[in-house]
Length: 203
Length: 203
Image 1 (cartoon, one colour):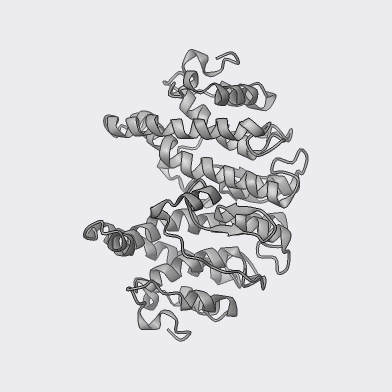
Image 2: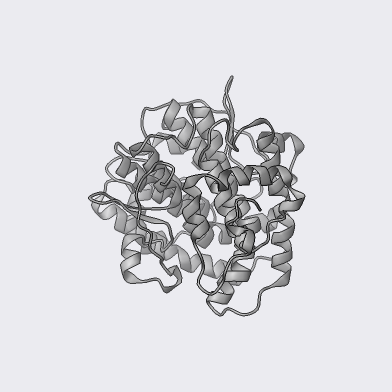
């Protein structure tokens, strides 16, 4: 939304509380949910991003032709599904969710798996950015946003092996320096401060 | 694709074999993959369906305006994510995948969970179809296709409690009678025949 220069007010929702008022907005009980002023209440991240693309067309964040758009959507799926299950879910659940909800000690085997799996994804980012300016092609797109969203969560935990993946680091440095990314880098989880280099443009 | 009257030749891919030729088409190693003649190779089901909507616009399967399209996409997410994790994955993995790949005996607790969870989804289908002709609105859409795709897998196992969910059954009977659904009802897993009523229009 910042890329499209759309104003948005963000609110924290503790989804695990399953509040009735929130379930009335989205019976699936998940975030994100977007309330459009004098418009619909939207949920599901793909439904929201596609809506924003249709209603606020500039700048386009999917690509210029159907094949490029398919490639962007494939990569969004890669990060929101594959990276999510292989990395984000393991590390964030073990290190953050368990602590927030007092669900016991982190499982070190799960953390090891997440820390191992991330290397394949860093290599994939490097491979994609070898021939392309951005992950989905020549233009910055939702593919970069999806990848950077997941990586920034892992970076908040201090678990991204930047030193071993210079090319992926170069790509992330370019994402991080975009004005649209500044608000995200300022977000903090109460009681769980990020490592020093998290918001640093020179990391 | 049958709704759009597009010819397609289907091929079986045993994804667990992780064939190099297949990984070259889709490095995520998942189905579906669509090879467009003289066009791109597409993967990820959302990327494929959105591509087909953009290139073959009639009949539209998402809805007529941005809000309707967001509602369709939300429901596709509901079935492909929520129904998938709460029902399909549990039952299909325990009953089919384990048998196909010799992964041991089915876990009866997982099967019980899937058989319990399905009722909420049947109620949700009933609730949606109370005020709407189809799940996403007045027009048949990808929401109906996603829901019916998951339900037909569970129905193949004989695990859909139709008798307790008359309204959801009425909706499914209407999907089942569409010409586009016929090919799916003819699909069989070798060595695992479907129950008698699976392909029956009067079930």
